[in-house]
Length: 149
Length: 149
DNA sequence: CTTGATGCAAAATATTTGCATGCTC
DNA sequence: GAGCATGCAAATATTTTGCATCAAG
Picture 1: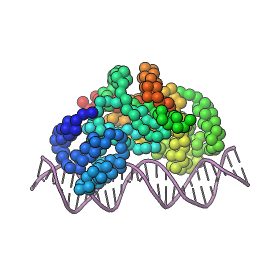
Picture 2: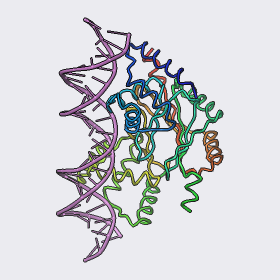
Picture 3: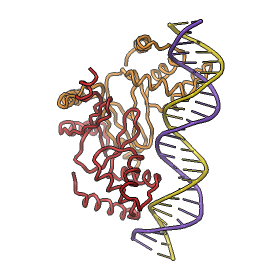
């Protein structure tokens, strides 16, 4: 995982480039996403930010606006599956994909170079200018297989 | 692609197995999904079903309920990306993955055996009982690259 | 000070649910 | 006939937007 300082640098640079402002709310949201490893819904993120910054009084609208901003600029990524809505996590990790358990909702991350390379090849085959790629493997995790049998 | 008759068989079998009923609405939704190749939102599907079955007067709630049913049972699959919500397509095609253009929203399907195999290997590595897997490559399609440059 | 950002509440969407009634089985 | 499914409308949930006000640059 990258240093928070690096992430923050990227963020401020990004904001400057687009004449956007660096606000306490935006930083709080970025930081929350960085410190809490995992995948969270906008609402969950809102709750965490509010909890950790009782002085700030961050509105849910700002969370949505900031998440969109972060995702658009590549600093955060979203994933969605089944009933659950969109979940966000910080980007700029080493690229990885996800295993998702349909029973308990657990998300496991993994990385596979062969797949990475293959994805590049496929994008090329279709003349796609690839900006991102994701893979999800859905099924039952070891734990839930035992529990259900 | 499978024959519609086969799909219908699967569907009726599934319904029977769970003591559910085979209704005109359910069939209309399955058929619409089968006949219209592509990826559609619940609302789009509702519109199409209503258009093709003016006598049926299908409610949006039924569409949601049926889509959930079809997805749960593996006869349909959903995919979601960015601003757009969940889109459904018929399952039981040869397994394939998706290239998604961020500019025009076009979805291209592709299939790659190497990736398929690799996914199986990864599921095994994590002791996952894999029921499904999806891959999305996101970027700019050939057409939009030209348009935007 | 200028301009973009925020919080709030309202609006717009999207999805789910309760219930009387209609259809399968 | 019994019981699930449906349509409708209301209830929820989710996301976006307008606007007065605030704060970063």
